[in-house]
Image (tube, rainbow, N blue to C red; front, side, top):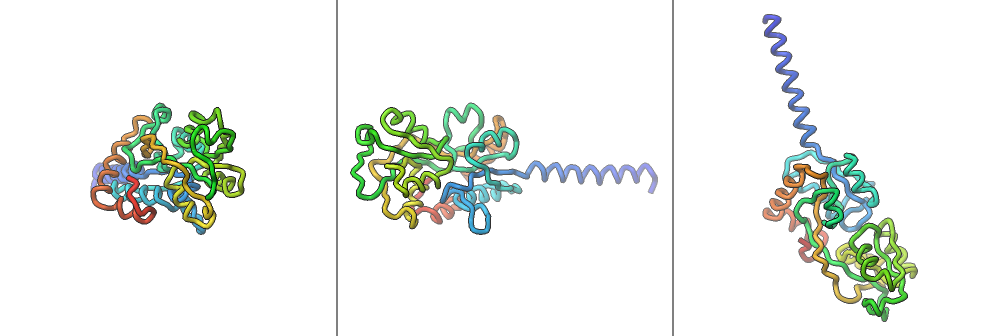
Length: 252
């Protein structure tokens, strides 16, 4: 083999390796979730992230044939972390809102949400503006529920906001809250637990046309890739299998 051919062969091999590495890097997706929002995302006894959001993320990555890492991130810093490129997407039961759309893009919805009040069983509270006047009502901070409380009831109730949903449940259970406003599906899960015994939904659901999507950075092509993958797992039955593990009704 001549020196020229040897150099050409080495260059070809190096080029192939670089292309393979580039493809691997392109297909590697880091996904953030909160890890404190049962049953959508939480940490098990082994320290592993589990839940509906996590399984949906895994199914979407399999559909896209992408290598994904799923990491935990506190809710308050989850959008700043995305914009700082700590990860590439957020799959954490995040509502698509006009405010968030100013700083991130969203995929199509992967489930829909309503709000509901939770109170102690036997409570005589009417979940109206008049009935809640003077009461202490909690919600998780920087959520649709928290925003709804502040915008619609902040002038008549004492609004208490929490860093995690679990801490809101703890104050409700200990009697420091008269009521809790929450996304209905995580509250439904809590009410079936031992900690939720003695509490129930009060009043009608609050339907605010809330859709839950996957957040990505502005202009990122992952938006369309995730949307296509969502459609695919809904069509092939994968979504329904994950859904029925957590809820006896469709949340799509």
